[in-house]
Amino acid sequence: MSFDHLKIDFPGLIVEGFTPTSPATSSYNCIAWAVNVQDDWWWPYGTPMGVNKESYWPRHAPKKITVKAFIKAFETKGFKQTDGIDASLEVGFEKIAIYTFATKPTHAARQLPDGNWTHKLGQDIDITASLRAIEGTTYGTVNCILKRKLK
Amino acid sequence: MNIQTVSTSTKNSKSRFFTASGSASADVNSVAFSSSNTKMLSSDSIESVFESLKNSWVRSTRFKNSLSEINDDKSLLSIIDLGPIVVPMILKDLRDSPKHWFYALRVLTGSNPIKKNEAGNLVKMQTAWLSWAAKKGIDF
Image 1 (tube, each protein chain N blue to C red):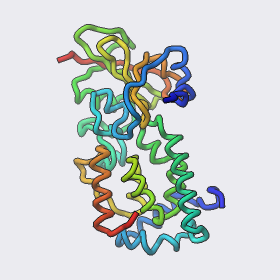
Image 2: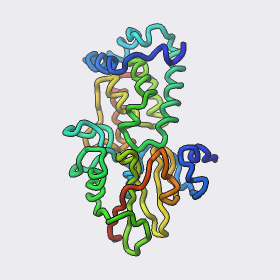
Image 3: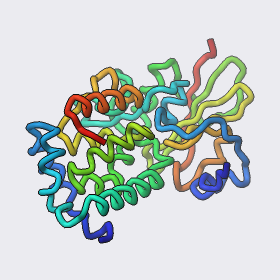
Image 4: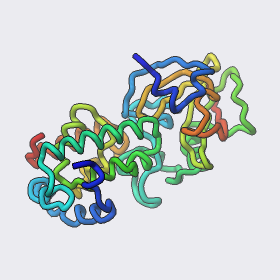
């Protein structure tokens, strides 16, 4: 199977390399995948005070497309924001990176036990790649890192 | 007829189809060909326009994680502009290859069979809409 379409939107993959790890699916997005969920689409969609009609969003997180709201959503799963952008592997911790484009969250990735990162690319496939590999005009850049203790 | 000639203001279409929603199946069966967007097209043409717009929507939103951006995509809005006649086409695609058609279905039919605790789960939302279609007797 050709993955050339990925390299158009994410040219960093050409240099950094990547490994496809799943078939394409619309069942879950990167935000759900960051917390290991594969049967829900996480997104704060709908009117600010209304319910989400076609996506899941944690009840205690603000329904806004802001970094603060996304951090709150990940906090419901035990993650806490770290100081600075430390993407190194820390034994006993699991990390999530939030990407933003023009200050709006666009993507999240989860660190794997080997220090590499797993990315769900929208409705397309999951890949293993570095954080830098998918930075660019599609998802922007890494804005912050969160972490939680591994159970 | 090309795609540009069939699309009009989506904002107008949204409100028109929402207000015509006394019965969703009645929308699908009776409002469809009275839509100003579709009355000049044969059903074959509509299917072909629908397929073309669907492929464009899939291509341009494949990497989107934002449901807002998936739902606001111009190709999806043009599909909605075609009117309730496309509901069976959407249901067929939802059955065969599930995608986030739910906003379009909600706008086009004025219904929302998805329960609050099912929101976000593609399989449950797909099942809810296919059951809704079966109850309304919509063939696709």
